[in-house]
Image (cartoon, rainbow, N blue to C red; front, side):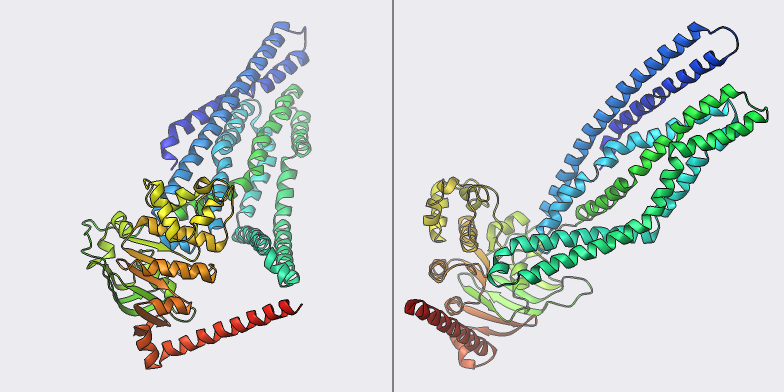
Length: 583
């Protein structure tokens, strides 16, 4: 990712080197002025003014070149961040939809936003700080060695002591503590988001105490982890700061210089360079130490970015084939989310004929959602094959597949765009009449007209739709795509009974399409041409609804349970209504 920007990095480093070396000129000027003033005999004014002028020039050069280096570094940082975000967008755009569906949107948003931003210190500041940390001490050392190599070694004692503390900041225990710290911060953020998003439910059902307790538990956990982290690093950090502090550096230089002067091995005036440049030796190292945590944070952020960039795409056939018709066939399909994980689907054999509506039913965790997600190729089966028109989906070009298969999931995602753009997402060149027709079929047209700007209303800015309204927008989107195969994962879960009935009537008119739907409502099941009963990843029964009821097997038991639940719900609603009327 950084290789294309290598020339710019080189320019940043060169500018910083020039600025860092020029920054030593004022110190050298002070040294020369001091020597001129302390030398026996008359003061050489030319020597003094020459040193002052050269020092001023060096200061000016430092300001210009370090400013240019910093400015170019920040421009380069902007380019790198833009490049990273584009690469992440490309990677996420090509990632399997199944992989995306198993990640929280906040988790991916953090990678694209916060983690990319965390790279800023590494790009914009690290090159300059690293150059200063090596070039300034190197030039200073060469100069000091020409004066007295023994006192030079003594002057390096604070730097050596500070550097000796660095490995203590990189121990496995320290890294684990930092990971625990990040995880604790994440738990606090998650508990806050969950509490805020669910505040209405919490208030309605009196669960505020439990909700607060969850947040307080996360906060207490963070405090404990943070305390351990601080205790583990405080002694090391204090030792580094003490070693690099100006009083300690001056004390070491004065003691060493006193020994050298009293022994007659060094002139008193030669102590001045060590007092001035000794502090210069420690300043870059201290700056590097202050940015150590930022560098570590950048390293962890880069690891998460690389993880997303490393997500592979579903394999594409080198010789894609075109389906002959809209017949869907699943042959001995098995699937597990992880290579060593349990099988979610176990030997599914199923045929969906064109122009039929197939309802998938079963208890929670039976594999219904996984089954319907194989048809739009969110995942590839671990074993077996899913065929469309006689062609394995793995041999169908992705664009061709989504021209034939559209889907509506229970967890609807709408773009921050106009209602019309959301409906026409799969067919951006759709006419307003076609968009309106799809909305009418999804029974959302009247609600759209009631919005502030009708079909031009921006979702998420000018209006926030309810769950049922968002699902009907998604259904309109699928209908506008006009694909011959339609997959619905409880697409009317949040709709009221009247809307659900209207949408079912619309689906009943789509007899030219192959429709696969996860169904919980009895009305949807009764309308199906074929019912598939799943349990523990296997098809335990399949057939027409009336035939399965006559068999009095698993589906019949499921039907009776659903009828009982509906009856109980209706009775409860009636009692509430009667109570309201009596009052």
